[in-house]
Length: 396
Ligand SMILES: NC(=O)c1ccc[n+]([C@@H]2O[C@H](COP(=O)([O-])OP(=O)(O)OC[C@H]3O[C@@H](n4cnc5c(N)ncnc54)[C@H](O)[C@@H]3O)[C@@H](O)[C@H]2O)c1
Ligand SMILES: [Zn+2]
Ligand SMILES: [Zn+2]
Image (cartoon, rainbow, N blue to C red; front, side):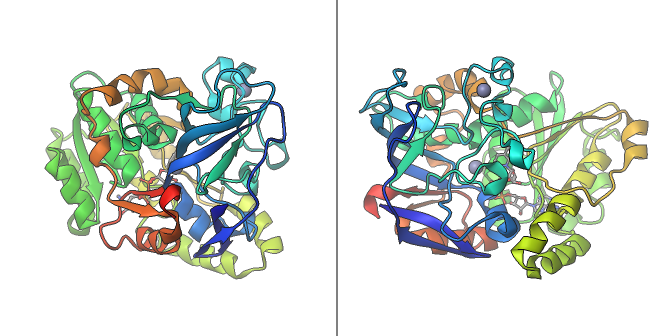
C-alpha cells in the first residue's frame, strides 16, 4: 500500500510499504477513505525527530471502512464506517473507566513514561504505524473506533478523530462561566474549532493569531480577533481594555511548542537538532524544547482566579514557570491530550443534521495522499492558505 512516511527533519515521502495485517485478536484493519494532517504532525516534522525512525508511517486522524476484524472484535464488522480516535485505548481499565482515555493503562507506553499509545506519533507514544496510508491496523479495535452513519460525507465526521474532541475538551477545561469571556491563542484548526465551540456554548471569544487568512476566517464567523503582528507588545493591555480592565475568565492556549516569539528556545532546539539522534533524544527528554511563549501569554492575560486551558502540546522541562504570578493570581491550569471518546456523544448530534460548527467547510485543502510532501511543507510554512488538509488515499 501507499503510506506517508517520515524520513528526516522536514522530509516526508509517500512510499510503498507492506499492507498491514491482523496481528492480535483485538485488531481490525480499516481501509482509509479520509486522513488529515494535524498541527501535532508538525512537531514530528520539525522538532521531535530524535524520537522518529526513517520509514515511520505518520498520521492519527483517519476514518474509513472496516475491512477485517480479529477474533476478539465483535463491536464492529467489515463494511462498517468508522472514525479512528488518535489514541489507542482499551475501554475497560481504571483510566478508561474514569473517561481518561489518553491515559489508558493497557496501552500506556511505560518504557517512555508516557500515556496511551497514539497512532503515528513517534517512539514516545509507541511507534504505532499511523493513518496517512491506504490501510490502518487498529489495535484494541473493540473500543478504539467511533461508528458513524452512512450517508453524509466524510468531512462531517473525520474531525471526531482529533480536532473536535480536542477543541471540545479545551473548552470544557477552560471552565468559562456562563456569559463569560475566553481568549483563544492560536487560530490553527484547534484554536479555530475551540472558538466555534465556545461561541456555540454562548461565550464571548477573543482570538489571537498572526496569520492573515486564519484571522480572516475566524472574523468571518463573527469572532473578535486580534492580530499579534499589531499587538505583539500591547496584547495584555489591549485584552484588558476589551474586558473591563480585568482580563478574560479563561484562556485557551492552542499554540503549543512552536510558538512564534520564542527566539532563545528556537536556537537551543536547533542546536539539539544538530546532535546525532542517539545523543539528542535524552537531551530533549530531560531539557525539552520548551518554547513557552504562548503559555506565558496565557498566564499573563487571564484574570485573577481564572482558568488556563492548554491544548497545545509542550515537551520538556527546561523553562521555568512563573510560579509567583500563577500563585498570586490564583490560576487554575488544565491540560492534556484529549480523551477522544469521552466527548463523542456530546459532539455527534452537532454533526448529523445542521452543521453549526461548520465542519463541512473546515478543510482548506482536499488532496490525494501523493500530495503529502508539498502539503506538509505548505502547512508548516503557513503558505497557500493552508489551515486544514484532508487527504483521500483512494485517489492517490
Ligand atoms: N491536546 C491534544 O490532544 C491535541 C490534539 C491536537 C493538537 N494539539 C496541539 O494543539 C496545538 C495547535 O494545533 P493546530 O493543529 O491548531 O496547529 P497549528 O500549528 O496549525 O496552529 C497554531 C497556530 O498558533 C499560531 N501562533 C503561533 N505563535 C503564536 C503566538 N505566540 N500567539 C498566538 N498565536 C500563535 C500560529 O500562527 C498558528 O496559526 C499544537 O501544539 C498541537 O500539537 C493537541
Ligand atoms: Zn491531530
Ligand atoms: Zn484502558
